[in-house]
Length: 200
Length: 86
Image (cartoon, rainbow over all chains, first blue to last red):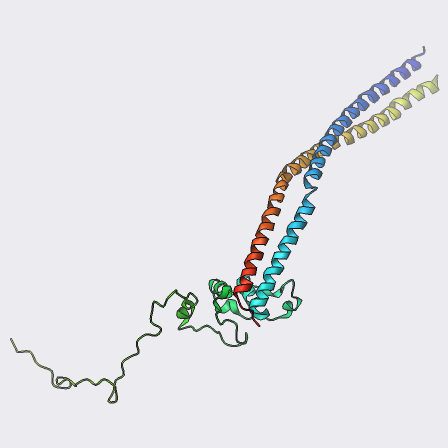
C-alpha cells in the first residue's frame, strides 16, 4: 500500500471516529430530551385532568353569584328606589354608582345622592335595613341633610328601644319676668349695701 | 500519486473540520434542549401541583349555591317586611 493510501485510511478512520463520538453523544442527548418530554407530557396530562371541570364549575358559580346579585339589586331598587339605592351603594363603595346596576342599565346615567357624605356606613346600613331614615329625600345638590347640632340624637333615633327610656323632650327652661307663671319674692338684701365685717 | 496526496490534504484540511464542525453544532443544539425540557417538566409538575386545589371548587360551588339560597330566602323575607319605595 502506498503511503498516500495509508494516510487516506487514517483520515477516514478519524472521520469515522468523529462521527461515532458526536452521533453517540447526540443520541444520548436526544434520549434525555425524550425522557424530559415524557415528564412534560405527564405533567401536562395531570394539568388537563385537574383543570377539566374548572370551566363548568366556575361557570356555575358565576351564574349563581349573578343570580344573587340580580336578586339583591332588584330588592334594593324595589325597596329604596333607584336614586336612593344608587346613593347607598355609592356611599358604601365610593365610585360604584358610576358602573350602575347590572339589571338596570338606566342606573349608569343616574346621579347618586350624596348619602355617603352625610351618613356613616353603619347608619346607611341600618337605614337601608328598614329604619327608614329620611336620607336622600332632598335634592343631592342641596345643603347637607344631617342636623349637625342634633346629629347624635338623630342617629339615636335609628335604634328605637323597646320602650321609651328617656323623656321625649328635656324640661323646658323656667319662664322668668313679670308675667312668669311662677313669681318669686324679691329678696331684701339684693341691691342693699354689702355688709361689712367688724374690724378686728 | 501526487493527486492522491492532494486528495489526502484536502480531506484532512477541509472535509474533516467541516464534518467535525457540523457534528459539534448538532450535538450542541441537542444538549441545549435538555435543560429547557427539564425546566418545562418542572414547571408542568409545579402547575399540576398548584391545581390540586381545584377539587375544592366543588365545595365552593356547593357553598355558593347554599349562600345564594339563603340570600334569596332573606331577600324574600325582606320583600315581605319592607314596603316598596314607590
